[in-house]
Length: 432
Image 1 (cartoon, rainbow, N blue to C red):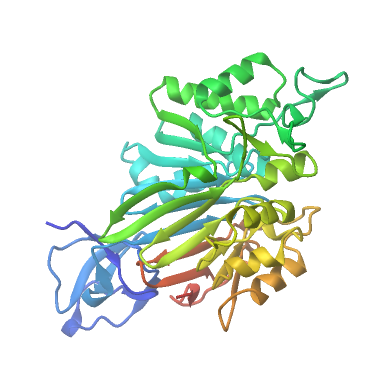
Image 2 (image 1 turned 180 degrees about the vertical axis):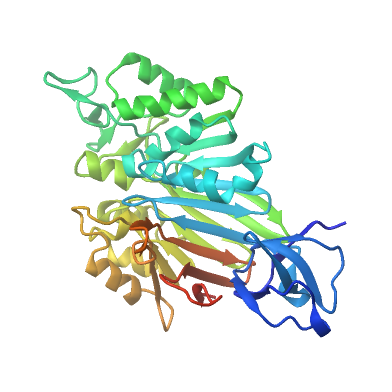
């Protein structure tokens, strides 16, 4: 007996009538996004309708609006000034960044997986991707790793950590905020300090000189691994190429690593120095391309102009960057290459940024160019800040989220309206 189904058509009507009068329920109590989970309350359809439970409500869905395939779902979470995205496809679950604090964990515990955790069922995340070790991208992972209700596959990262500086300088042999840099025999300035496995991280931690926040993250990794809840830690670079390739729901799923591009120094892979500490750690963010069926998404961390030029030069004359949906690099910063945006040429762009910060993200030129270099006649630019609203009665902030739903051919993107008086909750668009 099938116990659940998913929504086939985006914003499909969910009827609230307790019985099917004449086979035609009339009152729409909600509209559900494609891929939403439906618990079947009866095994067979009645008059062309299934009796189901979804989003905490019991009602009826047209059989024609249901399917046994979930498809791809990406939740671009509003984590304030930072990045955090949850990816679900088939039985796989990935996190790409987790923001600066507890927002990601709170969402997973209090909403997304609350029904499982309340039943005492642990939640497994197949992979955690740390695009780079800036606080607004990785610090939210530390508390999540400490939660014993979660288990983890592999934590992937770019291999660049963070060092502390005392009054007397950096801890030897470190000479910058990212470790030790030097000029190679070829005259290229490179970052010598890098790491791959958990053992590498523990060795760095025990040698001293790392930022306290970074040390806490490493210790959380160590504890989760000792408890048997974390499988491995692994560094990624562009020559890893295809990280994942399988078939889900009879559609190809592929995850390709496009960055960072590293320097081969006599068999040792090192990162090219880019202007300063900040540009180097940002510019060598993980660059991931996710493909499902005929649809594609690019996740590029905090890439900047120098890094984008480096990537274009490295892959030229090929262009692996063209996708249907792109997460805007560096929260909509002005540090971008228009040539790189032209290569991506997405149908839709997602910008993740926060309020009350000094960076003025997203910048007007980044928003404008996201539209200018889109290949759509009507470009779509989504913003987590614009998806945010305030409950005036309770004087509380309602964090926004951009939903992406894909069945391998079609892509829909949506965020909730700021105020709703009907069952029409979503500001929703078909991207492809």
